[in-house]
Image (tube, rainbow, N blue to C red; front, side):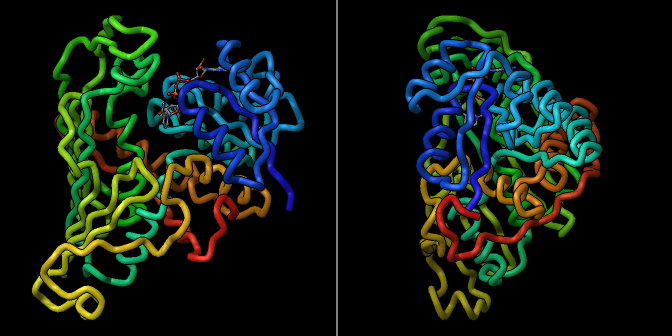
Length: 382
Ligand SMILES: NC(=O)c1ccc[n+]([C@@H]2O[C@H](COP(=O)([O-])OP(=O)(O)OC[C@H]3O[C@@H](n4cnc5c(N)ncnc54)[C@H](O)[C@@H]3O)[C@@H](O)[C@H]2O)c1
């Protein structure tokens, strides 16, 4: 078994779980080295993981033949320049979400990767979790019939209560709840319902400023320059209509940050797609659903155990393990930019664009559903 060597650009907050999961769960991945604009962050991460190599900057990392894949863990507004430079240096790139701060930048990256013959893909990988993969199998087994509609809510009061440096969520390109949290929801939705065809959106900014209450910037006031309450209506190619709300303006409602799918025979609750696992629930309608009736009866909400034993807890980095296997074997990664993350970005951006322009936006990029995870899969191995 050959290992694939990963170079980290950015070792901020999100790197904690990647460092842990690559080390603990992904036996076919190896961390070859790291870099960060803030040297102290790189030194801290290096010390925690037994003296990881620290590169002077991202260009030194790209120049190292020992790096097989660049893992871009910078902030959304920085994804484009980092991924572009890595591709230009001849490296495949797996980027945190969103693919780029704008659809135009994302498109440019996909075109550059194609021109160079390099793989490009990225987060989120929560759609590989037991929750969404389990729900996908139930839909394929026709348990709730044909999907008709869906609803997705991500309600929270913003990240300034916990993130150490949250300004980028409010005033940098790629900020706002739709580009930050929307990727989890729209990625799950397309993996369950197929590609999106048209988007209508209405958005607003409720608070002109936000005050940081986390450390070390407690008390600092952030100017808000992005819409922080975003509602979208998505029409899928299948005819399904979904509503999506993402917001940093209101408090969450218990249990609401999941996805609901309404089918011809019953309804399904898909667990929060920001998580990997969680309970799948089904309520079958009065009309006949033979498989559901046989297994679970009619009438009440039934909790279903996902058929997957793995990826119940935070497994961020497994999408990277899949990407690495795709690189080694020549197959398409499950989280491909050309076939998934660019489509998701186009949909997310279309919500604010539709609101600003007062019209429906047609989605042009493809989404291609990749194979479901095999039920017998070994954790972290693809
Ligand atoms: N924080 C989370 O809980 C979380 C969870 C999932 C995904 N994400 C995603 O992860 C990404 C990073 O978020 P974060 O919260 O870790 O941000 P962060 O600000 O904590 O970390 C980003 C790091 O990237 C470094 N960086 C930026 N440009 C660089 C460059 N050219 N070379 C080297 N280092 C560079 C910064 O110095 C910083 O340390 C974002 O895309 C975010 O959407 C974050």
